[in-house]
Length: 78
Image (cartoon, rainbow, N blue to C red; front, side, top):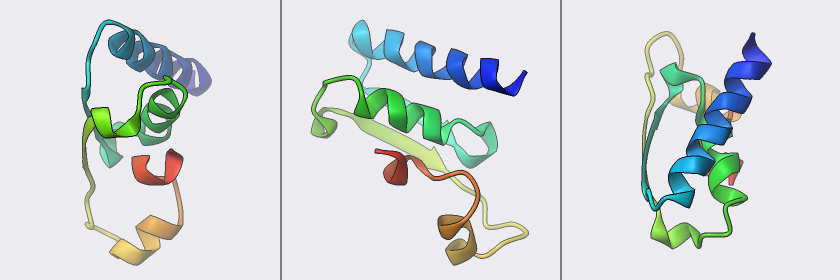
C-alpha cells in the first residue's frame, strides 16, 4: 500500500540521481514531496546541483495552512 509507494518513489529518485538526473519534478498532488526531499538529501550530491520543480494548489486551503501542516513540501524535507 502506501508505505510501498513511498519506498518505491524514494528508490526511483535515488536511482535517477545515481545515473545523473538533476532535474526532479514533484507536486503536492503526487503526494511524494517528502520522499523526493529525503532521496535528494541522502544522495551525497550537493543540493545546488539539483533543479527541483514542485507545484502546489491553494484550492481548498490557504498557503500558510498548507506550509505548516500536512505533507511537508520538498524544501522542508531537506
